[in-house]
Length: 116
Image (cartoon, rainbow, N blue to C red; front, side, top):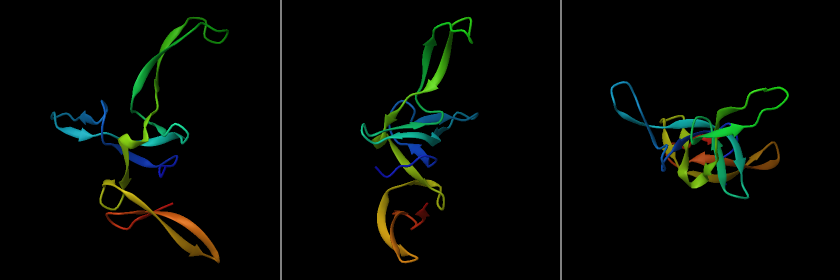
């Protein structure tokens, strides 16, 4: 999986693919990755796949409530956002030598941008 926490991603499929602006134009939904689950190949993205969760009353919360939280979506439904061209991009992994150590760096296929 080539997506990490705090990456900016674009949703490319599913119910949260688009959002509409004030003029009614469809805009692809983007967000920051909150959590990554590599065993199940899922990611949790900020503001995407919002579900309602019912909470029981507790000592701190005397009355129960319904809260909205982000649920994980499949990693194949998102692509990394290339900051140079501001479009979704595929990623390749390149080995680069830095200070005598070999490091694997993610590189954008569109613009050659190196992700940290």
